[in-house]
Amino acid sequence: MSVRVRIAPSPTGLIHVGNVRSALFNWLFARHHKGTFIVRIDDTDVERSLREYEVDILEGFRWLGLDWDEGVEVGGPHGSYRQSDRFGRYRDAAHDLVDRGLAYYDDRTPEQLEELRTRAQAEKRHPNFYIRQPAEPVRAGAIRFSVPQDRPIEFEDVVRDAMRFEPETVDDFVILRSDGLPTYHLASTLDDVEYEISHVIRGEDLLPSTPKHILLSRALGGTPPVYAHLPLLFGPDGKKLSKRHGDTSLAAYRRGGYLPEAMLNFMSLLGWSLDSERTIFTRDEAIAAFDLDRVSKNPAIFDLEKLAWLNGEYIRALAPADFIERVMPQVEASLGRRLNDSERARFSTIAPLVQERTKLLIEAPGQVAWLFSEHFDIDPEAWTKVMVEGTADVLADAVDRLEKIDIWESESIEAALRSMLEDLAINARQGLQPLRVAVTGSSVSPPLFESLAVLGRQRTIDRLRAAIERLGAPGHPR
Ligand code: GLU
Image (cartoon, helix red, strand yellow):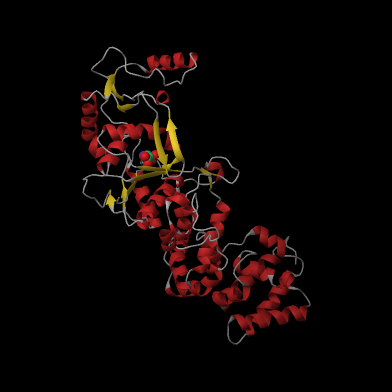
């Protein structure tokens, strides 16, 4: 059987990491089996579906490198891969099921249906027990699928093993609403049948819909696909993943300084493992190893700390030039302008030192902002901590020594400042931390001597003089 799988997101919001994990598993499965990965847009909800969310979904997939063989934008043998283009097709299919006696019109009101549920419950039956075809047929309203009550619906889920649903627990579900629009059940199942989907790999939250989809696939003349329901995502506290645990949209991670390859690695571990040891692996290794039999039933833990750690590992593993290329846009965006050539050179010199200290790409601009004069601000807290009685004299001494250096480079700067510490009999905290704050504005920066070397002698001395002046202002300790 050739593998044909799909991801079918609804463009009613920014794509959720749970859906992205489903997309990734479908993609890995397709690539492993040299099958076809399809992206279909489930936009049956015309009021809530927005084109901007579709753009977010597709940009997210592209960012992660999940390329698709058929579907929206790339097309394919089935015409449109947007459900809103196929409303007529679903309507015809629903009417055909009515003609064949497999579905029926229903004009009961929500209140009447609620009454049936209450009655079933009062009789200690499943609430869906009475949601069945009324004795008197009508020719208006919604169309419901008639669920055969003679036998259970059974199937073998690749992840969840043998599944069995008693027929009275499955309501005669609506397939076409009274306004003529299809429900998710009809549109999704008909598409899966017509696009010859071999495996449906999706979140476990959709498990209760699966008996409906199986019955409907058969009624529509198809063979139900193989189902694999993936474990839901939980936070490290064991509660269902929600905003409390951190961002749940992929967009937040895309903008938040994560590398796509780190994100892909992290997300592939949400319910799957490559082997019992390795946490870090490439996309090709994941493709080579991926199969549904290693997908776990256990809840998958979305652990932001692990993601941040992984991201840091990936950032450090980048070639320096690659790091610069990825961070430069972030630096320029935070400055609001392009860097000129000499600034680029300065940034490139310091970048490897920043790379070692960065877990998220978005941290980088803050770590180098002091290199660019318009962003040179002194952190008041850092200032108060290091600027004490006598600091102005230390800074003045440093200026003298720095002015006398022959060749301005980190080794000569280090030698000059270390001999200052010795001559003044002070330690690095007393002698070097004030310099760091005066020159970089912060008590955490890339290594000091390299930082001064990159900043250049004149800017360094100007900033030290400005600090001395500020210390001399009334009310400051001298
Ligand atoms: N549009 C549905 C969703 O995003 C698709 C579910 C499915 O894969 O069948 O939940």
